[in-house]
Amino acid sequence: MNGNAQFTRRGFLVSTSCLGAAIAMARYLPAPAMAAEVATDARVAAQPLADKGFASVRKIGDGVYATISDLSKGLTTTSNGGFIVGKESALMIEGFRQPAGAEFQMEALRSVSRVPVQAAVDTHYHFDHSMGNSHYGAQGIPVWAHEKTAAMMALNYGSLQGTDKTDKLSALEKQAREAPTEAEREHAKGDLNAYKLVFATMDSTMIGLPTRPLEVSKLPLTVDLGGVKAVIEARPGHTPTDLIVRIPDRNIVFTGDLLFNLMYPATFDADLRAWEKTLLAFSGYDKETLFVPGHGPVCGPEGVERLRDVFGDLTDQARKMYKAGIPVEEAKHRYVIPARFKGFAVFSWGFCIAPAIAKLYEEFKLPTSPRSSQH
Image 1 (tube, rainbow, N blue to C red):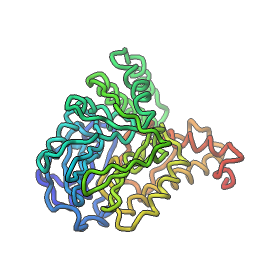
Image 2: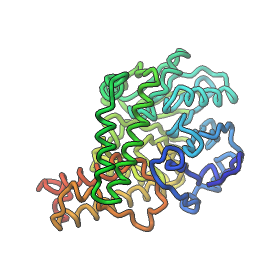
Image 3: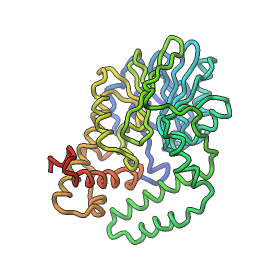
Image 4: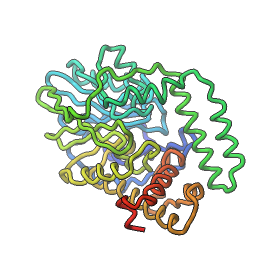
C-alpha cells in the first residue's frame, strides 16, 4: 500500500484497502501488478481532484469522476462511487456508509462544477452504499434506486435501529470462543466485527430512503446531463436491488457491488447464477471499458475475469466437497483460498465465502440446475 499522503495515478488505480487494519476483519496484502492494465490509461488524471484519506476522487473520463475508498484510512465512505457532470446537470453515484461520505463527494463535485444535481443513484440497498443518503435529502437532491431498495432498507436496517442487539453479538462471541478449529475461530471473529460495523452504522445514522423507485420494467433509463448521457440498468446478482450506471460514450461503467476487484464478493444476498450471467455480459463489453467496482481499484475487463475466476474456484471446491459427502456446515469453513487469490480481502467469511458454499450446495441438489450435470 502506498503510504504517501498524495497518491500517484498508479497508486489510485492499483492500491486497495487493508480492511483488517481498519476494522480487524481481514488480512489483506495488496497485489499492485494485477491492476496494471489501466495504470497508464490516458483518461485517468495524473492527480486526484480531492483526497480525504478514507477516499479520493479522480477524473477517469471527460466529465466522469470515481470516488475510491481506502478503508485503511477510515470507514466514512467504505464503498466506491463517483459522479458524472454534464453542461446542464450532474448525477451522483452512491450514498456511502455515512452522510459525511456523500458530503465529501458533493464537495468534490462543487470544486469542478456548479450545475444542479439531477439525482443521486444508490446501486443497491446495502448499508455501505446507502446509509449516507440523508445528506442528499438535506440538500433537496432526489435519491433514485431500484424499486425494491426502500423496502429492503426499511426491513434490514430501519426495523433494527435502536433495538437491543446483545443476543446476536453474544451468540457470535460464543461461536468464536467455542469454535472447534482455529480457522472457524478466525472466521467467527471476522463475522463478529462485520456485524458490529453494520449495527454501529444503522444505530448512528438517520436512514434516508430513496425518493424515486426505478421500476425494472421501465429500465434502462437514459439520463441526459447535457453533452453526456448516463444509462441506468438493472443487472441481477449481488442483491435483489442491483443497478449499474453506464456512460456509453466514455466506455465507463459504475458496477456497484456486481464487481469486487481484488476482493472476495459478499454473497449472502446473492443469486449466484444470475451474478455469473451478469459478469459474462460485462466480459462482452468493449475491451477499453473502465469499470468502477463497488469495492477495490478501478480496473479494465481483467477485473471482471478475476471475479469470474473467483466464482469458478468457489464452485470447483464446493463441488469436490459435495461429491465427497462433506456436510455443508463443515464445507463452509474448509474452502481454501488459492495462492493466486492470497492477496484478496475478505470482508467477512460469513458474508462472503460461507454463504457462497451453502448456495452452491443447494444448486448441486437440483437435477434441473446447470451445475447438477457437472457433478
